[in-house]
Length: 307
Image 1: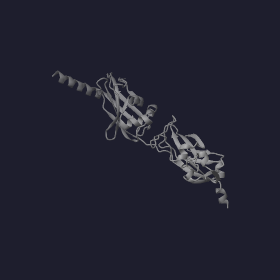
Image 2: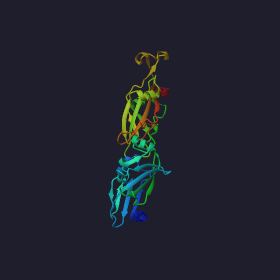
Image 3: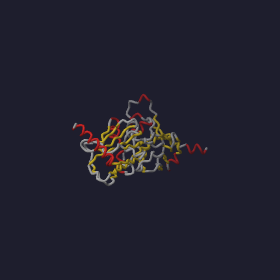
Image 4: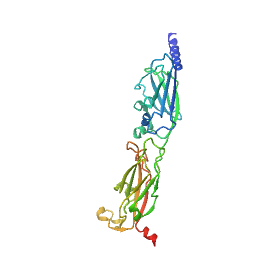
């Protein structure tokens, strides 16, 4: 009988406390993909606690992140959570209190993604918040939930020079204009675009040139999506006259070269965030590089057009 009365008392006091505490959660529908950015932007998440007069006891915030099917992918480590003393005054909290990453336990691929990139996979999620008591973790407020969407970033698309465009060498010596689309959606801080141009030698594939050659142009452009390169190069390409049977010889000995009018290049853009890290993971390499494009410079193009 005493045990039953105790259970009833706990249930009564719990429901009374819940009735005395009203909470409201405000969450941006599309918050930053990097979760650590939430703490730096108060407009992303606001949690408001309103208590009736006479309420004064400590609570901790229990936060869960779920997928849309209800699977919990992250939850607060309640044993490490910071206590908050309720009072009759309105308490306004932000992401640093509601979603402290150092006290959040993530699972599976979501943990791996967060550790590797600071982001969760692009998807729809649900954030749920509730106040509980320390020790026994008894609920003292209703659960409030909000949906949010983490968008996947679209890396730049290279516009000019377009793929396999042939440029006039005389004009190219003066200036080559590079243009590309921006990263979307727009990040909080301006993106730094790392532009690189590589020459493709006659015995190389474009991928080999991209991976092994020293860049002719290696520059970072902050926030802009255009760059004018003034190369001042001769643009006379090398031709390999050596047969395939000589491939076992060293590079210095096997390649005999003559000059011909068509030079071949490959260019790409790497997108970096404010910390200098790739803005997203791409193809498992984490470099956030746009699809590279090949272009040519022809020293005889202008002369041919005049004839």
